[in-house]
Image (cartoon, rainbow, N blue to C red; front, side, top):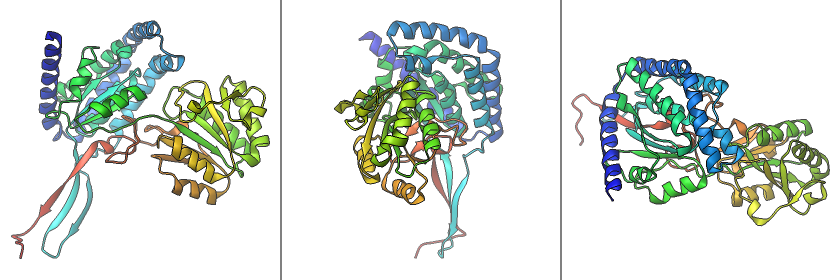
Amino acid sequence: MKDMENIAAMMAEIGALAKAAAHDLAFASAERKHAALIGAADAVWQRRAEIIEANVKDMDYGREKGLTDAMMDRLMLDEDRIRGIVDGLRAVAEQKDPVGEVMTEWDMASGLHIKRVRTPLGVIGVIYESRPNVTADAGALCLKAGNAVILRGGSESFHSSGLIHECLQDGLRSANLPEDAIQRVPIRDRDAVSQMLQMTDTIDVIVPRGGKGLVGLVQREARVPVFAHLEGIVHVYVDAKADPEKALKVILNAKTRRTGICGSAECLLIHRDVVNTIGQGVIRALIDKGVEVRGDETLMTIDGVVQAVDTDWGCEYLDMKIAAKAVDNIDEAIAHIRKYGSQHTDCILTEDDVAAEHFFIRLDSAILMHNASTQFADGGEFGMGAEIGIATGKMHARGPVGAEQLTSFKYLVTGDGAVRS
């Protein structure tokens, strides 16, 4: 009980400090935020050897916990990936500052001039698993949007996330911004998460980034509003008029480039008319790459395909596995995606623009793609520099959540002695 009380007191203090920092940060100049992010990027690069050393400890911890190969890949940092973190921080720094942007303005016959302008949300709580780079992405994007942030990373990335967080605070200090603008929960205890979900007085929104278990827990227990990213059950539909070369290139990349990210393809739907042509070629290429293809009865005729079971439809493998099914037409593919998808990212491969438009109109996923790998479902690839996650809900933010999506707005109304009749 005493431990719980200590954690509650610690989290209350973190929340109060974040709220105070958010008030100051809301008025910080674009130049100071830019300087803080550049300072953080420089610190990460200067301390890359320390970060990699810390990551070795995290990798050992992950192996002891029995993490899958895909999860271990998410956790691992090397110099190239640290360069990616640095580039992401610099990219966010160079983006246009969204705070204070006039979204729209208009005049009324009453004499009022009305402007809608972007404002920070306030304090954001980010709860995430495994990937230490999220520490940098989330901290940078929240700072850019004028928000304070409380970071609670996974126990697996405890050491490397801690050092990255120190670098972010180095950047804040160098720019004379409050260090409390980017805080990190300094313990692994899960009770800290439970406390965050109840901090309605100090946290304005929670962003969970992780597996179904984590996000489901947050959605069930949070009293604070949540930007949800439940699962990446990503479908690729091969239309009757798909180009064979494009289909092969896109599908292999969508599945095998990195299996542990949320944009990885998890289900392949193939128009029955091209099962014996494009379908055969794609499935054999996947198997040759080491992917376990779990197919329906039609696709079981292809050597190496494993029998699919009911639980394969709607499964997020995050591994070298993919479900595959033959469909009679585009509407059957759409119906399957509606039933089993997670409204994250879905793709159509076709040279028929009418079919592509039909797919785009009839589905309501956060991201829909035509003849492009689903691995592009990423804020950096959308020109946002980085992302705090892919929101699959429909309220406020949707799709890649960048700095702009981490703002709200207010109305500025000006008159010249105007009175209402």
